[in-house]
View: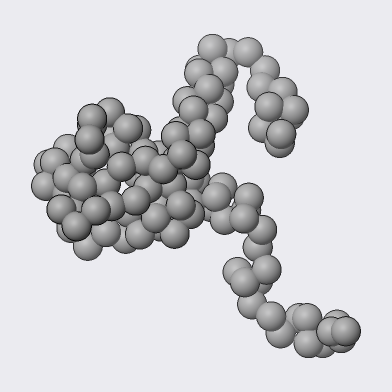
Length: 115
């Protein structure tokens, strides 16, 4: 059994839940934009296409893609083409529905957010 002192030494990021990690990853507007862009490209989105559309540096782009990959939202192949995973498609559908509700002026129920 772990004592309170030992527990307090564990870095907070290592005890975050998968849901917290997912919300952390999708909290950044560029990552949400990347999910949408990748979803729109049939067969995946190549790095050069994404750079051209976002106008961000290659380093910043890889940083955000790595976060999306780490959350299992996107995957890439050896041609540096990125596509959404099943989890990525589900997450994007949630984001889209949530954005639509927020933009409609209707109240968003807690039940939809924390299902």
